[in-house]
Length: 188
Ligand SMILES: [Zn+2]
Image 1 (cartoon, rainbow, N blue to C red):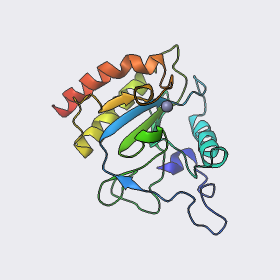
Image 2 (cartoon, rainbow, N blue to C red):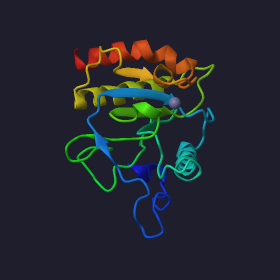
Image 3 (cartoon, rainbow, N blue to C red):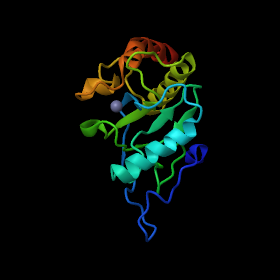
Image 4 (cartoon, rainbow, N blue to C red):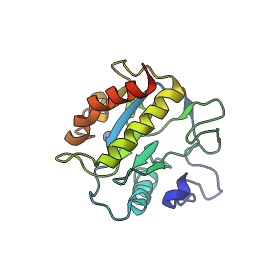
């Protein structure tokens, strides 16, 4: 939940209290991995997520943080984009189990879960703990939403769907292994 990183929920609201960016939902069909392009060896990831939240919400003007989930170097998984005002049985979903649309990959936001790995992975790999957490989170999402994990477009890096160096060399390096491990976990 967003309390884990101390989300300032007032940032995403107009002065009358209404949400700047009320949640919209779509059936989840794919996963897109990112790096946040921030500091590595981060002693205070919650503070970093608050900074990203403020940047996306106010500087970008989106009204919320764009990633659906974030993962720090210790492998902790954080809720990103809020499903408010709806609240399903699972984080980031409505009662029908559809995922909240984030803002992480332009034309690909609808129906995709954007996972931001905290750090910069242009010349280093994510920590083993972070890789484990990505695998667990992706396996859960794949199972929960019945994503066909062997499909070419099921699990991708940001650079596979847009002209960007994100998620960096180190995350691209783990993509194939991730697909295989998730396929083994979910048994297809
Ligand atoms: Zn990205």
